[in-house]
Every structure is written in structure tokens, then in C-alpha cells.
Image (cartoon, rainbow, N blue to C red; front, side, top):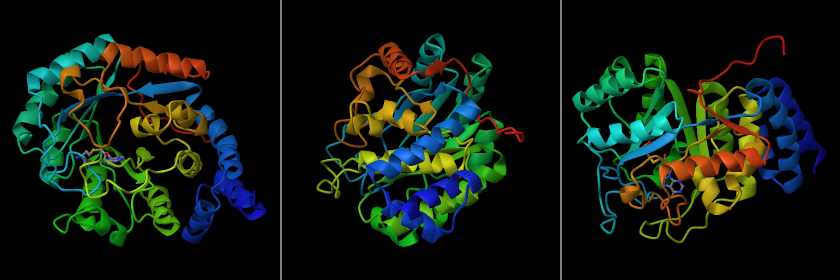
Length: 354
Ligand code: SAH
């Protein structure tokens, strides 16, 4: 490994920030050795704050109906081969019920931008979930809504909101999205969510078409300055019925390296080893934890609908029961010396004495 790269990684581990051009330099310097070195610094930081705990989130994919047409996404509006479904509030509650008995204390409600889920419907659902499971956190991941909507959902009990920024470079954003979608609007949503008081998650795909070390440097600078509570990153995986069908998938090595770098930038961040990472390598999620991630998100969606939430090809865990997913992940984590814990899994702060 280049000594300059080693020095930059070391510096990042100490100061938790770097100039944008240094981030670009780090990304250009991605190699097996630099990734191993970054992990070597990231894992002790993660362990100082979270020990060997791995937080689980029960992911409930509530709808694959979407008004948007993101070029990378399998549930985009223009994909007419996608068989659409949506879960009723009753079905969502049944997923929570099952999840609770399996030890989940966070439910993530994710879906396409489906107008069926009005503020009124979601607020009532949130109140019911929070009343029935008062010791649980609810995360929403339902895309862009207006500020008033985010406020109502927060007041009804939503704790967290995941909205990947997808890329922090406006030109790159335009290449991944149709002209009807705006970079400025997505960034404004993230700002609104934070101001309202949500624990906010941003994130991006690794190896998305037209991504460069320079755009990734902007992503890292954005994470450094926005200070999200969570950050979801996973490799881009092509979906056969999208305009990006023939683009290559993102690399395992770069994803793992970025997980470590993000841990160095934000030691206390909640960082999932994503399903997409598990899709491109059979040990992807284990490798993600060993690079510095501390969250996994097994699927709690009804098995009858799971295959239909196909954001990308070959998505794993679409055939198993929720209980199987949960116990499979627990044993996977155990096998590498980590433990899935029964907890809401809120962000912890690095104590100042450390
Ligand atoms: N509609 C919600 C949820 C989107 S799906 C929203 O807008 O936030 C969740 C994430 O899956 C997206 O943010 C995107 O980063 C990721 N995703 C979509 N298509 C993908 C693909 N082909 N490969 C990898 N990740 C993908």
C-alpha cells in the first residue's frame, strides 16, 4: 500500500475528517491492503462503542408500487413486468407481531412512493404499533414526502427515517434519476427530517453507473458534515428490467473499504451490512461486520410477497420464513464472534474519556 494512503487512513481515524480531495485520493487507493488497514482501525472504534453487539432491524417491505422511475431500481414505475402488491395496515401489524416474538425491537417500514399510504393511514398505523409495542422503535423508509407529512408521522411516533441521498453530486444524481426528480428536493427532505428530530439515515449504492472517486469523495464529505445517525451503503446490483441492466455490479472490496472509512469518519454511526452486500457474496454480511458495520436488517415481509420486492436481481432471503432469516443471521454473526442483541439499537455516543 502507498504510504500516503496509509497516512491518510491513520489521520482519518484520529481526526474523523479530511478534505474532499483526500477522500478522492483514498478511494483511488482502494486495494486489498488499504481495505485491510482501514478495517484494522475501524473495528476497534466500533468495538469501543458497540462492543460485539449487532443490532437487528425487522424490514417490512410494505409496497412495491412506486410513482418514481429511478433508472437503477427494479420497482420503478416503467417496469411493467413487475407484479405489484401492497400490504394492508392489518398485514403490517401481523408482521410486527411476528417480529416482536422473534426478538425484533425495531421495525423498518420500507416501500415505493405509493399514494395509498396517506398521512392519515400511516399516523393511525404508527399509533397502533407504538401502543402495542411501546418498547420498539419504528423506522420509516418511504421516500420523499413534504415537510408537513414528515412532521405528522414524527408526531404519531416514528423515530427514524431512512432516505438514501443516492449520490452527493448533482450531475451524478441526474444520471441516475429521471428529470422529474431533483437532487435539491432529496437533500431538502434530509434536512427537514433532521430538523424535525428524526434519527436520520442517508446512504448510497457503491459502484452505481457513472460513479467516480470524485463523486464518492462528495458522499464521504456529505456524511462527515451532515452527521446522520445511520448510513446505508451496499453494492449496486443490476436489475434485468431497468435501463442499467447491462452495467456491472459494485465491487465487494470497495464496499467493505467504504464501510471502514465511514466508521472512521463517524465512529458512533449505525452502519448496516446490507442485503445487497449479502447478495454479491455468500459471506458479504459477515465481511461487512468485520469491516466495521454494526447493524443487519433481516426480512420480516410476508413470504408470499417477498419475491416481488425485487429492487435488483438475485436478492437473497426471498424464500425463507422470518424466523429462519432471524436465526440464520444470529448464527452467522455468532460464527464471527459477534452477537445479535434484543434491543431497539439506538445510536450510542463515544464517551469523551475514550
Ligand atoms: N422509495 C424509498 C425506498 C427505496 S428502496 C426511497 O426512496 O427511499 C431502498 C434503496 O435500495 C434505495 O435507496 C437504493 O439505494 C437501493 N437500490 C435500489 N435499486 C438498487 C439496485 N439496483 N442495486 C442496489 N441497491 C438498489
